[in-house]
Amino acid sequence: MRNLKRIESDRNEWQRAWERFLEDCEQAVEISRENLCRLMEDNKDTEYGRRYGFAGIRSTEDYQRQVPISDYPDYEEAIARMERGEEEILTSYEVKHYIMTSGSTGRQKRIPLTREALDRCIFPIYYAAYACVPGIESGSCLHLSVFRMEPPALEKETILSAAYFRELYDRGTFHLEERYLGGTGLLFSKGVGEVPYVKLWIALSSPEMTGIQAFFLYDILLFLRYFEENWQQVLGDIACRRIPKERPLSDSVRRELLKLPAPEKAWIERVESECRSGFMGIVGRLFKEMKFVSGVGGSTFTAQEPMLREYLGEVPVHYFTYAASECMMGITTRMESTDNVLIPRSGYYEFLPYNNEGDQRPRTMEELEVGAYYELLVTNFSGLYRYRLNDVVQVTGFCGQAPVLRICFRKNQAINIAGEKMDLQTISLAVELLARECGVRILEYSVYDEKRLLPGRYQCFVETDEDFRRPDAGRILDRILMEQNEDYKDLRGLGLIGEASVYRVQKGTHPECRRRFLAGQSNLKPLQYLTDQRLVEFMRERAADHSA
Image 1 (cartoon, rainbow, N blue to C red):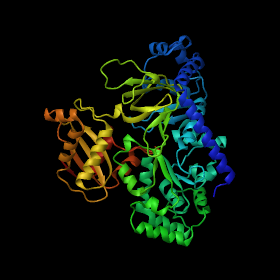
Image 2: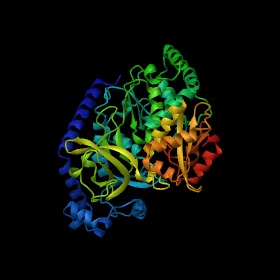
Image 3: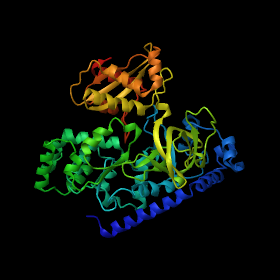
Image 4: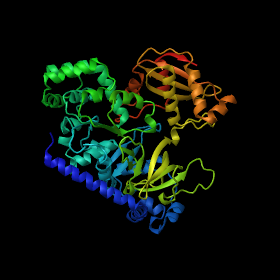
């Protein structure tokens, strides 16, 4: 049981953070203007600021006229110089970390993260964002990440969530040692070579667990699948208080695990009984105090979410935040909601109308229309200016003056063989409908736009937990895509796109693909859109059969 004084302290901190956030939302337009003025003044003497005349910018119109819309290649050389020690290049603020992106756009990027940016986002993200989670201040959570960060590697190469958690740890806030099961010795460690094993050992030693957190909900799904497949081995190791030598764990990690209190025999027997009864609703059935799971989800997780729900039972989902390595943009304010309120102090935002043939002028937040779609441009406090995130969002409302955003898809992940503009949200829905119609559980999938054949066509690689033989699966997927995308239907009718194919790949193909080609990345997103030919060939090599 957590210290009662700390519980009360945390409860008060959450309340203060929530009230401050709501106050900011009420003044979001003014804060946005202040952000731009502050950024121009503080960075006017940087190389970038001198190039684009920051000193003379007095308004949004000046800014949009003088500073170009940008992409990562516009910064790559400058960031490399900053890493070599040059100062006053992109930003005047102290750079605390260089963040590695997940590579979902086709390659990994390195993004600077300054202390100023951390200061502006740390409390909205890790206090206000959790204000809607029941019992968060008093419970004990399992965090599925292991943040392998020790100087100097911490400054040179890390991930966004690691940077924020390390900041919380260094500042002595959030009481990480008490809040997270296993303690900081297992949360911050280089010696965890098999993360799921360690996390499952912690979970099965913790009947009192009240929540599971990860940066992505996908991480939670992968963990629960590991639980289903390996519970007997791990539970046996816990009962015998032994860790097999072949497990790739350091001596310090082994000691930390064995220091965890040994569960009572009755709990061990209950775990075994519940697991043998099946894994439908296992989280809620087994952990009676479980109040939530939390992670980034939404449009990129559509096809996998039903599987996660099967494991969770009635346990609710907290969708945490709208974040990218470039900026922490928004927080969700309600359980089970994928909509996010823009964090007013996190940056300066512009919104490019999407699929609007009229006025293409970038909008500011006071000009946004509810229901409309926009491409987001961010000017952050880490040295990116009018930066294209390539995220398309829909405005679903306002919290005070701050827009509430629903993330729809990424522009650079839309498939476009012949002009159909097929986004991954539609693909995810189509795969979900395919699974439902065929009566099969699709564990993971990925899609590739095969353009070397004429006409080009969609190839979908699906991984199931049972033998799946449907020669007509490709035709079913093709029909569903035509029902979901009118442009695809028209182009199929014109013969400009060929019929889709479905390949059934061996179980474990997608995890093995990540290990082989994306080694070293943490907090992975689902591997949905294949742009690397090596990954495509790997999928084809593991294909058990295919249908058209």
